[in-house]
Length: 279
Image (cartoon, rainbow, N blue to C red; front, side):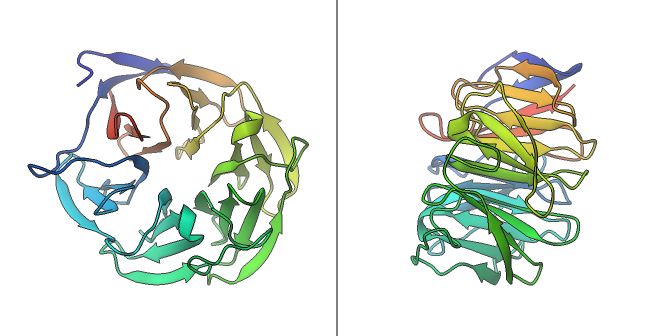
């Protein structure tokens, strides 16, 4: 437990609660890859252990778990406005769309059938735009972003290896902000690239060290985790408005709830969740 630690971001102060989330006796977290929050402020944790999906209420009590036998390698998770849970299985080259109960509604990609330059080759993350389209960062084997329609049909892709505009070296996370811009954490190029919904390059934000994940709150504030123990808060125009060190190691994922609290996913060596409780 990191007791009595307080951090600030953009004039907002948070109490650091680590570890957050109670498990039954004898059960431990595996590497926590990512997390997301549904409309009821339940926190869905995607971990590289069984059960892969853990569901906590806002007080940190475990209320559900599922996914055993469905996943090879937990990576990204996104919950849309209809509480559809989308989970990125990196090394199975597939994305599962699930009900909050864990029932699978549909799949994107063929399990254990990687595709060069096509969906998927070790994908990392998924997000959804207001028009219903999905965007997938892909990832470790490809240097691409793919767009799918709301019904799961493939629309288009963009990107190639490199460090120029619209090029990627490990696109590790993706988010669509309220201004309908696609933000991509271009990890090994130490930047976040911004595109319109058709994949046209807008600009790039730098001053990151291997950005791992992106979360944009309803007000348009952008939160970016680095591979070092740092969390950055930026305005919608990319202006840095706050930074803090709320974790001992780099957080692999970040999310937030309706109360303004932030949640950080930590893989090895800590394998835990950290909550930044808004004061």
